Image (cartoon, rainbow, N blue to C red; front, side):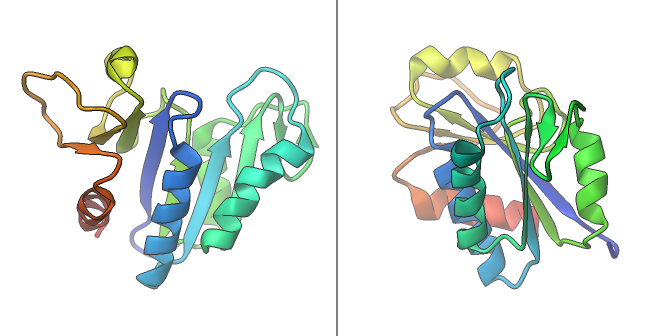
Length: 169
């Protein structure tokens, strides 16, 4: 794997824009010449439906990821069934392919740097359940008195992408 593999998580509730942000990050990392891999957490306790999960991982691939993985519901999208794969195990698997960057969609409880997507004030409680927050991207202005991390509006794409990529260098 070389000396350094960057790992970044993108977390948020359903329909908060995680996959779209993953596409933008994958594309941006790939444009910088970084070999980029992605891991997506299925997030549901039900078995994966191939046509649904392939849609997101295919979006990651089309954005430039050279390797994509989907885990959840007791399977790994390599058709390894009846086994739960932790994020550390998945990262070790990915590291065998020597990526420069591994972007992770989901796995809220893991302890890697995170970009947190919030649709609005109703999602603020998510920040109480995650650690290592790099920045927040919100769909609506948030009423937060002070913050240990920057908060971007979803439409400030150049602002948050520049910040995230600089932090990953």
